[in-house]
Length: 117
Image (cartoon, rainbow, N blue to C red):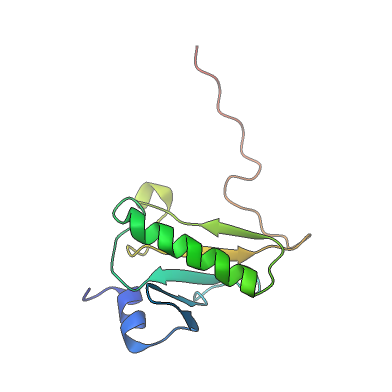
């Protein structure tokens, strides 16, 4: 898709890993060492727009994380502005985790929602 930064990167071959449906590369601002993004080659906006592409991306992400020998990781995607999506091309963050890495996810430490009556 014209004007999509991820499509441009896919089309120019700027990625480190790939399969028939996805590519993977380091994001501009990795939050832990080894953080990478899995991006479908086909432009879909998010998991709600492309559930099949989401499944393929998650499968590729899990396989790649295993091949890299990760012992712990967060697999994160967002769908929509309210869910903090900022690039509107489906992508999965694979964030390697280590004890004491200092990374706090957005929902860590939030107050629990009050039960409605």
